[in-house]
Length: 145
Image 1 (cartoon, rainbow, N blue to C red):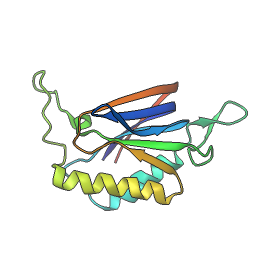
Image 2 (cartoon, rainbow, N blue to C red):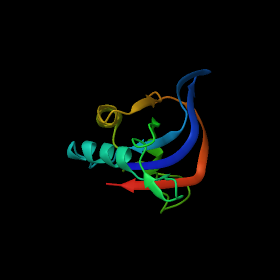
Image 3 (cartoon, rainbow, N blue to C red):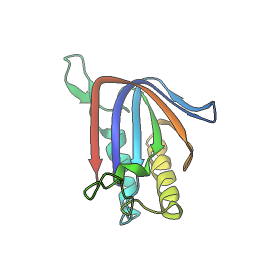
Image 4 (cartoon, rainbow, N blue to C red):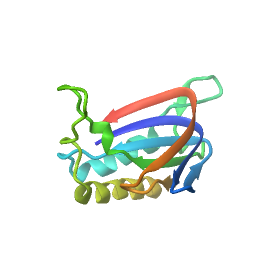
C-alpha cells in the first residue's frame, strides 16, 4: 500500500463536471493498493494517516496531526502510484492490485479513517477525476507499507 499525503489548505475532486468531494484545511491522500497487500495493512495505513504529525504547533514545529487540528481528509484512489518505468518510458502497472481487490481495500481504508473520528471525502474509484489542491508548506509525505 502506498500513500502520497499532502498537507492542504483546501482540496477538491471533480468527476464529469461535478464536485464530489471537497475539504478545507487537512490532508489530501492519493492511495494505491499493491498486488501483495493484505487486510492487516488497512488499519495500519489509516492510523498513519490519522496520526501523522505534519501540522505546526504554536512554536512552528510539526507536532500536530489532522485529528489534533480538527481537519478533514480527502482520499483519492490512484493506481498509477505503482507505475514502473525501469524498462522504457511507458509505465507498467503490474504491481497495482486489480480493481476487484483494490476497490474494497481502498473503501476499507476510508472507513477506518472515518472511524478515527475524522471527516472524510473521497473521489470515485476507477473514474477520470480532476483533483485540485492548495498544498500548504508545501508538505508532501510518502508512506509505503
